[in-house]
Length: 95
Image (cartoon, rainbow, N blue to C red):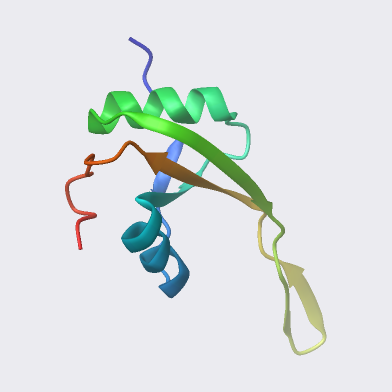
């Protein structure tokens, strides 16, 4: 068994993710930029013991931020929207 704890960074909590969870049984996670869909699927199935039907990923570019004259950039990150099988729930994500 491979250690998948380094792939999943944490959940994404927003109004849109709450609606996806209520309507489509989808859960959104912040994942490693280097992770691919197959690794994300295996990680979610192994860590939470659920059946995953599909994984969609989005690369989110970091925003530019300024403090006076100094300009910086927040880091890029990756978001994974995981579709769970009907009837499957992840503990802590129930509504």
